[in-house]
Amino acid sequence: MKDLKYLTAYTIPLCAFIGLTQQGVFVWLTPVYVFILVPILESIFPVNTINITEVEKEPKKNLHWTDALLYLNLIIVYGTLLLTLQTVANHELTLTEVIGLVFSCGIVIGSNGINVAHELGHRKTKIEQFMGKLLLLPALYMHFFIEHNHGHHLNVGTPKDPATAKYKQTVYAFWISSVYKQYLNSWKIQMNLLHRSNDSFFSIKNDMLWYLLIQGSYLATSYWFFGTQGVVIVICAAIAGFLLLETINYIEHYGLKRNKTASGRYERVREVHSWNSNHIFGRILLYELTRHSDHHYRASKKYQLLDYHDVSPQLPYGYPTSMVLSLVPPLWFSIMNKRIPKDQLPH
Image (cartoon, rainbow, N blue to C red; front, side, top):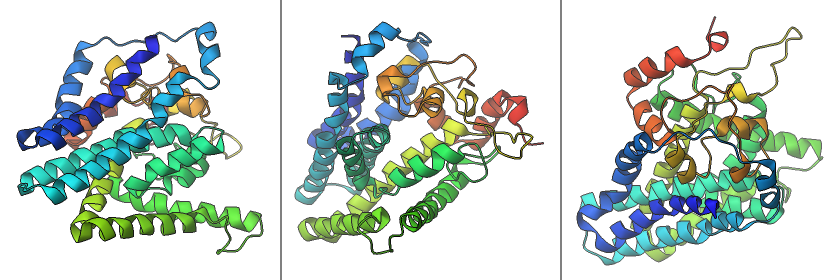
């Protein structure tokens, strides 16, 4: 029953639901919770470096009820999005209220959508991978499935990876470079995959083309039922969602790099190439995403099985707190630059 702690991840959409039903100042409950209250809670709750035993891991390796906690996010994310569209369309709201509701929806898309899609995208079953892609749709970020699995995990910590933030690169510069370069990389990867299998651009196997059609249909459906206002809302919520993802990408690998070996190739990905955090509240809120070092070391491991490695570089704060700090570059640099391992600093 220890895994009941992962129900904490539902507190974010719960805050969004309260904002949607109560409106007024409550429309800002979600961002206040995520970016103010959660950092405070992270400073109060203990740092937990304990790994579960092999005996405890065994029943969780196959289908387990903790997997259902991920699947429920499909209903939660799409339900939050639909309720946001209906609330804005059917209530007299101020511009401030609309911004608060859309931003809150974007946070849910990022935390309970993209974050869970990331987990499911690494699963081996087609149905779980399909659910992961569905969770990327509201963020208009379906290409993430291709780039992350075939690009980022291969190139992390190298100049080839747009999702690895460079030393002294601000989060704002990273947003721009990572967003468009990941999209371009996705097309390059897709075309290489088609070339290897001797398939044409218009092949049914061209997932990037499918993503264009699906996301275009999604926007068209939004327009059909909610008009121009609906399209603006889903686009703004999507932007908020994927910028949340990119901020997490920024802190996960900031300043870390893989060195080249004598052969000229990059060293293999190890636990030292991702920032780790054992701050318990952020861990359970994000389905153990903060144990990112082990995720890159063993990408197929389920979230509840991820381990702490004492050789991994440790963030001084949890992921939510670090995200807030990254928005103030001078403060972020003063905290993080001295913590980057010397052998990974630019020569």
